Image 1 (tube, rainbow, N blue to C red):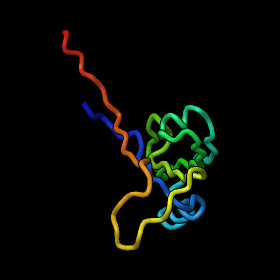
Image 2: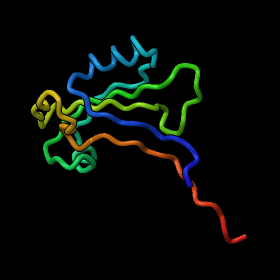
Image 3: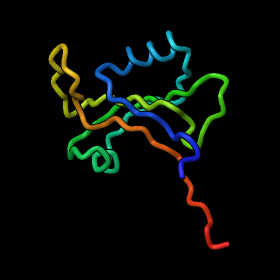
Length: 109
């Protein structure tokens, strides 16, 4: 059963520009910005040579969920994906997701 939101995640082509948009224009707060160049990340995204920059953002004035952020922005430093042709709706990588927080009710009572 869903009982909350963990976070949203989007792949972006320019992490700094995206941070400026979400924080500067929409008023979100940057909580963490880090490079992810490790085996766990490579296995998670399915690219053996993956190297990512990741930013985690929260909403001002709201309670922070279990992950500490509501939006995760991911820029692939490697591999590099070509841009989508204008007017297409195809994603240019496989890493966007919405993660729910769930629980299983105790039905043994």
